[in-house]
Length: 390
Image (cartoon, rainbow, N blue to C red; front, top):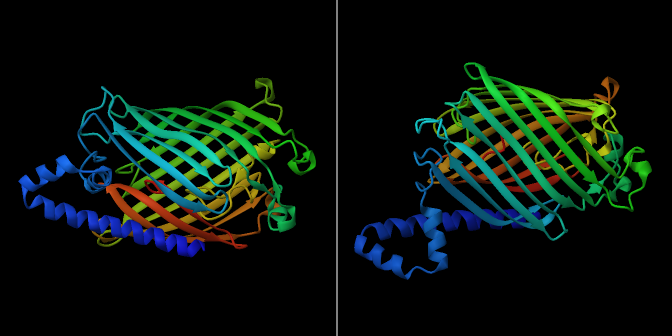
């Protein structure tokens, strides 16, 4: 059923794209006919015009502000059938000229048949000719998510599954300053809130409270030579953050987190890009069940059920080939490895990750993506989003 849904969705998207482009080319042959048709356009035709206007709201446009949005159905193993809408606004502050890459803010909303919902905003704002940056990522939602406990050994036992019914809120803020060309350093702040359902036994939460909060300051070191943040074709990105959640800041379960990401982008051959990424998250101290490192989201270890594999530490790597195929359509193939572990003695269970994706160039260098990711123990999921995974 999943594969049929995926193939059907891809065919629909490709057909709509092709039909829209051909219709637009015919209409452009007669400007008077275009003017007449524009006056009579219904809602569907206006939508097709919006989809076919590839140059409108270009991510590299010199306009001060431009908008793009799209919505549609998708399927995820953790949330079942769902509908989502996602949009991006590109803009420039007064302290940045129009030859610079624009700042961006992306927002999304999702709701599913399982009762899951989430909304979020993330992005980057450039200031003073990119002498400083404000990075942010926020998410709020409810997830009737399955929970298997902490550690690899618990995650692989299906009988451990219980409904978590989790309310959650996450806020991550950074303000970094340029200290050398392409090198930034600055402070950060994190806030995490989670509430498990009242039917969840405390024992399976490792003895921690059902309601847990964590907040505290941090420091960030970032190197960024990418040509475009949201859809890089070349360059290197490295990000190291350390966040501190001490007891004297009213954290009942104090811990320190180190989070490292490094990405590399390189043109391979005509219309092809190879992208590679390494991720690592380490928690030291006494993190609660909700603050553990997780597998499975729309960027890292795509296809794994989010939160099934969780422990103090995670590491992963992935390599992706992005190939333009025809007109505004492209495909991606990726493969990766990862693991979750509690200490060096449990650093031994390697989990595979691989998948295929469809790309529709909604605007120049701005893609709609539909990914189908797979992993060990029958894990699989479909991800619908805007821009690349990393």
